[in-house]
Image 1 (cartoon, protein in one colour):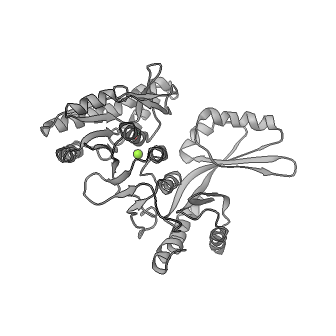
Image 2 (cartoon, rainbow, N blue to C red; image 1 turned 30 degrees about the horizontal axis):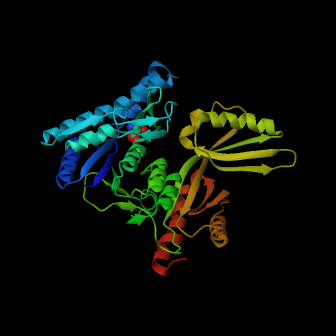
Image 3 (tube, helix red, strand yellow; image 1 turned 90 degrees about the horizontal axis):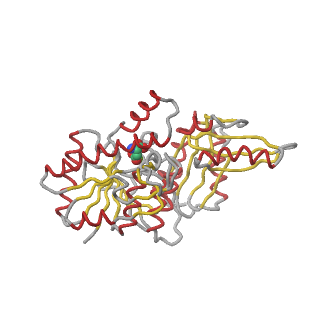
Length: 395
Ligand code: ASP
Ligand code: MG
């Protein structure tokens, strides 16, 4: 029998009506013969509200207690969904991360999954039940309840799919798939029918919020096909799987992400180490790391997500710029292409913009621009690299 993991995001279970309609879809799918594990997020806004509540009591809540509190959000959603499925005449059981055997590291609020022991899930599946698992949480070796960081339910779903050897992991959300650019910025952006893991990782890193990059990373490692689709319609979504085209070059997307550019000057290696250690302690992902040589000193540069503003505010001796965005140009075969870098620079210079800090990777070129012009740049590059080239052929 096929094992299918489905994940429903916060908006998809955001109201009583939505929970009921998701339950019906799950039951229909179960009747088609698949074994189904459903991962749920907390109902829309719940996690934000719980955080706000905690901060009213204590602006700096102990992380252990915060984790205990936040996991309650997913418990609410999972139990209501289980009740809705029973109402449809099918047996379901909801399980916390801990009951599902999701073992994590010790550190609260950003724990990584160490292993999954899915014995209980398998037992329940064997009874013919639909198993509902609370997203974004696990239990540490010390038996403490942990969370995986914001957006962590995607990670729960893909990690479960990997450990159960699922045929597919389906991520149901409020957008119909992955788009070449954000349709709110580029109205004629198109939905991608299929895309490789590598490309999806870059989309997720550089601004597409449909799925968390950590989840894509796991899917790539274990070769679990992913589907991203609407939770309330039957429209075909985007499939993410391995790519088997030879050396075709095609730009798939232009993305934008709001970031913080962090810079700090240093003269001695110890100075660098001291400041950088503060960043390491925060455990936040960094990108675009580089060191510039100046006449008498060096300057370290890197970027972090804009949402980390409060965390980085505690680090002394750094300069934080909050008015830059990253633009990503994504697609296979664009690595190493000097001509593309030149083309981008010339296009931006033509409108008076000097892009900063280029990074070239396997399937992307990315750089920084002032946030005030980022949307315009996404539109220009999307028109020139995607819309026109679709008409006139590949690069
Ligand atoms: N409820 C958690 C959050 O809002 C986890 C998730 O939705 O993936 O971040
Ligand atoms: Mg999410």
